Length: 553
Figure 1 (tube, one colour):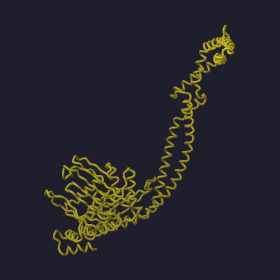
Figure 2 (cartoon, helix red, strand yellow):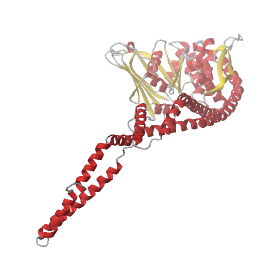
Figure 3 (cartoon, one colour):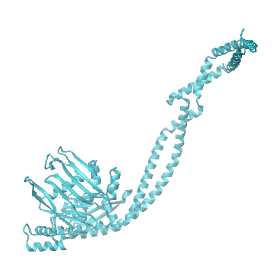
């Protein structure tokens, strides 16, 4: 609900504040007073593009602010959350046009682009101007009207839930099939790669160990010579080190009884002797490990060659990396097999959900087909009351081949404006003023059932008077019992139905500039304003009495 509109430095508006009431707000004023300018300013905070030509004072920016009570507007709160904007009970929409022509928009002081602004404010204000009734061309709005009157809330909710489930399963199935197709293109090659690695059956670090072993075998003779000469120097030479050390050990032991200080040396000699004996034993052991088998060397070389080839092929550097590649290929092949099971399960699930979806769509269709003639009849009756006595309204429902977000029905609102028997889409058959009245009639039927934002009607009563204008006023008043309505009107019958009556007029500023002003009329002022709409600038007593009757009725 719009709580306040503030306009500064816009066209011929220097500073203007509009505080509409919760119900029906009627706005009147002489032609050219600035009513359409106020709507132009409002359009800016609804996302319309700006123009620097609207600046009165070229040295100051133009600012338009709208204050909205959004405490009960769930759709708007959800949209704020989606855009990651602050959620407050009161939302302030602001639009600024700088002197350079740059335009900026803000939602609760956070900058937003025009697309976001338009998306958000469409949930706050529904502006009906002549030739600007896009809602009547919108399948969603037309379907919402049908379902609101038919009280299809539960059916629509069940269908929507099934539709989302169906789309989700369909998406998962498509992704799985796409993945399967990709795997099938590569499966033969991946199976070949896996088989190649599995048949070779490499062990951890095998290539590295084979490389080391082959290097040793390639230098076996030199290694064996070094080991043998070293062992002989210790145990089998002309003067083996071990034997010499043993002799020295015995000699030092012979003097320890007369020279106790030699005892530590004896211990060290014993330790060295034991260490050399151990080294000689290990040298002998290493000699036994030296392998001169030419056949084994050839086997290792072949194993090493294929190992290096595979390392290069898979762009890895170690045996363990190859084993990781093998494991990954194996998991992928298993996943490919599991994918077949997943696809079969998803196909069964999709078929089951589709069956339920068709049932829900059929239930919706039946309810819509039942209520469509009733709505058409009622709208036709209302059109007759609001100055379109020859108009006939019709709702055409046809079956879609596949489910959509709204069901399996295609809806179209049609109009025969002159009982010609030729029904056409409303936007082709109706004039701008007629479109406004058609929308008013339709929304009056759905007022209780549909949540709607602030409704603004610009001259909905164009081209009518008398009883037709009175009926428009009655419809607007009835609509305002459920939604905030602002109506710009030239008809006294409509103006008199308002809970609040605003008067737009021109006034001379201190610098003699002409500016647009607006004020809320008090009861006596209101009667006088309506009397002037009936009888001119100087209304007669009869006009005044007529105005009082209109206001009182």
